[in-house]
Length: 561
Ligand SMILES: Nc1ncnc2c1ncn2[C@@H]1O[C@H](COP(=O)(O)OP(=O)(O)OP(=O)(O)O)[C@@H](O)[C@H]1O
Ligand SMILES: [Mg+2]
Image (cartoon, rainbow, N blue to C red):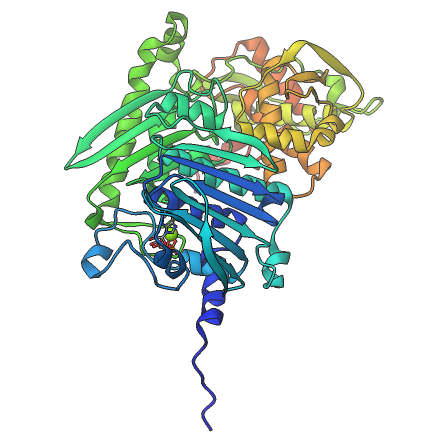
């Protein structure tokens, strides 16, 4: 007896919905993309309970007539493409004709819409079922209200993470849509409170400041190039504003935010000699190209795009980023330029031999006797500006000065961070950090966690008190390391946080490779390394010291076999 049967459309929609709408933020994305495709110049997004109770997207676009208003909720119903040719020449953000059907199948949706010169119309769907329709009053455009998301798919409902995670997802998606379309005025509010607003003007300084927070575009550089009819525009924020993750490198193609490893890497490579190791910039790259040279139909959410010429694009982007940043160097003060000539990689990093705050007593438990784990050796000189050469009767030793300084500073910080509550010092005035609004938000949500490690913020998220052990120039690093941790981990593991913090600060402040050390500095460094718990490795596991024995050297010269 046959057991296979055709699914009804509602069940099929629910299954398909899983790919298009996996969380509140993707509903926002689909609705705003529809508004953009409808030529709206103003898009308003309202979110309640992180989107779980209600989301409303209002636009002033072209609207729909009463037949389309209902038809829009059928699967595979779209006004944007009609044949295969259109599919390979996509200029709109949507084209699959499934977003509204998917959203309506897992929520309760009310759509109101009005075209120029017509009356307004309203349709209501619940869990994929049509409920009612009728006249509605509204301005030209469309208002979609989505309530009780996932009310009929409990497994998906449970999957939704913490409030903060959802909030970040929503603001991330909103930011990308707004950054892709400077010509549209966007606003986002959460639980009745306005969070962000853009101006609808083609001014990227204003736009980026509105999205990432004021003062972020100081020192921003820009390029605009056309190669083989492909326009590439870059908005490159100063390398001073370094992030620990790559997510603020945004690539847009024909007004669509995409995720593309090669192009993001091209931006990173372009910034290479301007950034600290392990840090990433905030940058936007806008590409305009013939849509037949790309395929957006890779995944229902359309973040992935296949290019005919990806490697060529990456090659050009890297070169343009590098060029724009290099040219901008002409604006930097004379004093820094000199430093640049000597030592390009350290322009934006502390140049000091910063072991100053590191005292022996911070490393050794009181009363304990330092164990000499490193051999006695005599300093010979320095190789390649980075490796300190030592010798003794057993052979020759090379010490990586950066790795060694990192180890020393790491153990110092691990120690001081063990009792961070002990003493705090007041900042003279509230200290404003260069932070995106999203980062400020993380702090707002975790004020207690920051307090636990000695940082007190006021309501405007200006820093009021910091632990005494932290030097002014390390404040940014410390806060950033903590935000990173809080963003990526749901729960805060203080021990882990302290370790990450110690690693981060110790690496950033440590002596760089190529920094010439005086004899006194070498002695100090080796003395400190000597008494480290683990003098042999930097906190990231690389060796601090390697040995070439007499035997090794004689063998290399073929004196012995
Ligand atoms: N805000 C809006 N203003 C005007 N028309 C809209 C709006 N939202 C949806 N529509 C109409 O409803 C149709 C269906 O929308 P839906 O989002 O389901 O599909 P799509 O945008 O065509 O493709 P995709 O599934 O890729 O988003 C659209 O093609 C469009 O004609
Ligand atoms: Mg759509």
